[in-house]
Amino acid sequence: IIGTGSYVPERILTNRHLREMVDTSDKWIVERTGIRERRIASGEETNVTMGRIALERAIENSGIRCEEIEFLVVGTNTTEPVWPSASGHIANLLGLRKDLPFLDVQAGCTGFNFAFSVAEMFIKAGQYRTVAVIGTDKLSAITDYQDRNTCVLFGDGAGALILKQSMSEGIIRSHLGGNARSRNLLILSKKDGTGNAYIRMEGRKVYTFAKKAMVESCFRVLDPSGTADKKELRTLFEQVTKIIPHQANARIIMGAAEELESRLELPAGEAKNKMIVTIEQYGNNSCASIPLALDISLRTGKLRKGDLVIFVGFGAGLTYAANLVRI
Image (cartoon, rainbow, N blue to C red; front, side, top):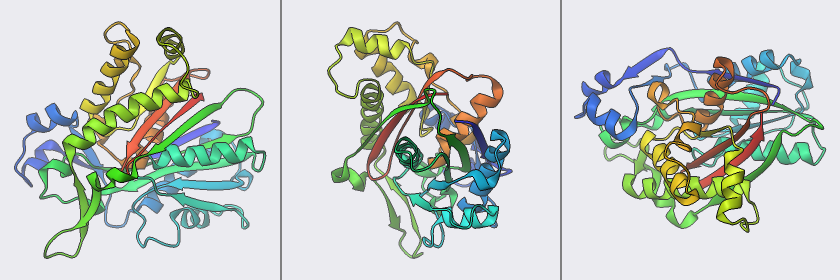
């Protein structure tokens, strides 16, 4: 990773604002989600416009020229219209190479992890040397602000990074997974009388799935064969500097940390202290949550060159994934 960038809209939607829209309270939201505010895109902003700014900032941060990017992959779920792709639109707006290949990956909130893995494979295969990856979503466009179980969670934003082929260790490995049989736990559903589709979620079941999926993904990205015993796995885990989880819900993140500590017989707080959490300020902005947290962490010094980091996420589909990276 040679550069990162991010973007969040100016508008802040606080828990106090939500209390005026739906039957809820700041206390109820914070206790159940850990969220105090989230960013909401304006009518003119889209996943494309946010992704363009994030990538522009990542290019500037990396010190490369736009023409050096050989491939662009975007994790997103909210392109409108749904085709052509957001990636092509972003490439055109930024004036990237005329013959640039580009594609979108839709894998729910795990879209960034999947897109990151696609970039990893092309670079390791030697096909491309410099690849841009974006995670961007405008979940406010598919959020029902009369449904207090979902509207308190979601926000908008984008994050991007530049990957460059190198002989030094960078992306070590990725683990991708899915459970298509449970796809109906988190879907878009049309609301009666409107014709518009909004996020619908069976929260308790998603919580159970997410906590287990995050823990198992961390284990598999450290031990791909699944043959390490508890002591070996604990040693591998102790080498990890930080974990950047998908910012879905603070209870899920802390629940997964507690499960890691229990299964590895770690001291209380050891896994929790590795978790980078930005959800209090930004809410769940889907594919943007991990690259946004990465950019913030690098810019504020929470992460430094040489740190070993796990990106781990889950999302609609149901999907889950982790990436093991040397920053």
